[in-house]
Length: 130
Image 1 (cartoon, rainbow, N blue to C red):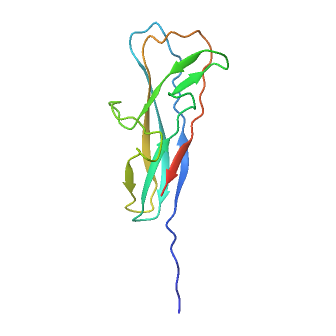
Image 2: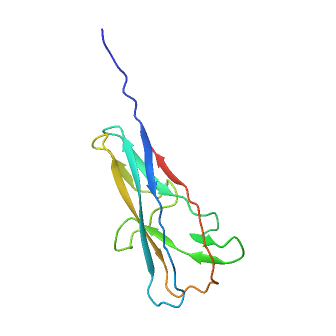
Image 3: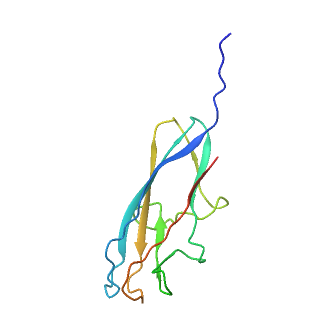
């Protein structure tokens, strides 16, 4: 006999940073940037992807001091559908093959944020759950 047990598996293969570059807080237009997450999953399994917030209650970058710069992450280029922050509200995807699947991350800093100059940073966690 020859047999094999195929695991239901999934993994995050790579994540592309969302780099906003230089933000002008006097500009009345939002600052947009794009990133991505690439995943692989066993054919036929369902999974969820979500991006945890910064722990501040909202998505914000900080300057290692007291300043906070708001931002949001979206799943669509129109920036109308937020990347969810937890499993309960995250959408479910179904893998149709084990090929690499890339999901875009569309970031936006709102216009006219009242912040001081400096370098702002946030580190988020992307979770794949199946």
